[in-house]
Image 1 (spheres, rainbow, N blue to C red):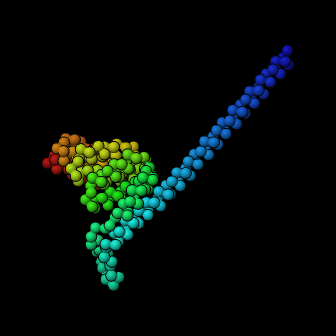
Image 2: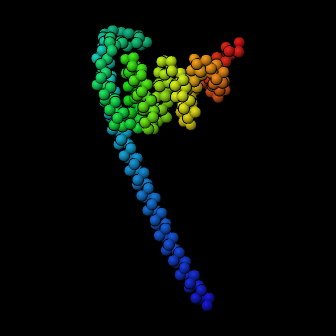
Image 3: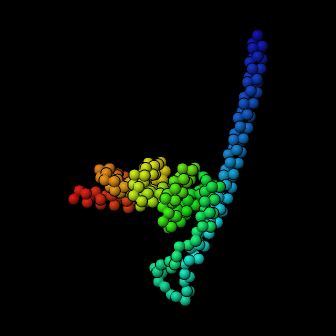
Length: 239
């Protein structure tokens, strides 16, 4: 009887072991498939970014060539002090070709880091032509269209807020800056975002809100330029 029971137990154990082997084998296969899919996606994404970068460099080169075409060339015989600024363009550069190339990057590679660079360059071109509304639109569109690195997100946000502040749209600038100052990443941009928020609040006549932000800057970011500047503003207000 005991022998029969032992045999039955061994049979069940063998059966369970076989099932476990099948389950483990299936799990391993699933992991391999998932890993393969991940690396395939990663490789595809890298190719996408590479193509986007090439397209952006083409547009950036067209922009730099346009600037060079209207910038006087320095005479190599002239010895100038290292602090002497380079010659300025004699007129506005013809940027139509560069604009088309950069806009194509935004269209073909909307959620790439290269398209974020393209948006920054395009905003510079538009701002230089006093087309602030176009500059604002291209930055807003790119910020709404997919992800990018924290560095580029910070640069685009600060550039957009600067344009909004210049055109007396501090209410809109505050909305943009709020997202940056409360984001989990971009810690290096938070002091600047907070400082701009405070200045916008003052521009809108919200002095108490501005004071709160200055206090936050002076305590949480006391080792930054913005934190030290905020402390000076608070001292001036108290005197």
